[in-house]
Image (cartoon, rainbow, N blue to C red):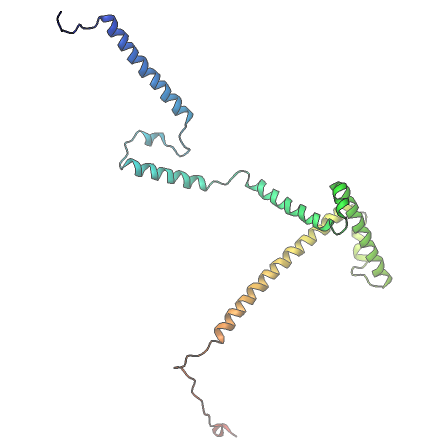
Length: 218
């Protein structure tokens, strides 16, 4: 027997080539699926993707990631306004509960619902205000004349409550601004007083001034 290798037949060569083609096609299909599953970022430019990278690969990837992160950081979150409203509502809810604790005991707070408690609270507050007005009238003192209240006759109670609440809110905001200005003025005064009453250095002693007032005498 000779040791010469026997070449493969034509059918075997065709099957091997077909297997190689099938492997290449399947790999291309997998690559396309992966690319579709991982889309490029928003700042991806198709025209620039075909151009070769001028610098090292690591540097270009780092710069592109920094640019995309900086561009995305400037975008405002679409629910930021809703989150701010939720925080304001939460603060208002705590404020109402703090005021209701002065009127209701813990058992009533746990047993009565919030709408029921709010109705009782408003009714008791209105009764207290009416009692104070009656005391002022009995003493002959009222801050607002009856003639100035004539245009408000027939006004809905809810409208009047909203007007009073708006005035109270405006006054509280004005008081806060006045307090901020007062603190700023006090800080400036302390700074100026500290600079005015600084100790003079020892090498710059003030010399006594001797005036002869006899020259200016009549």
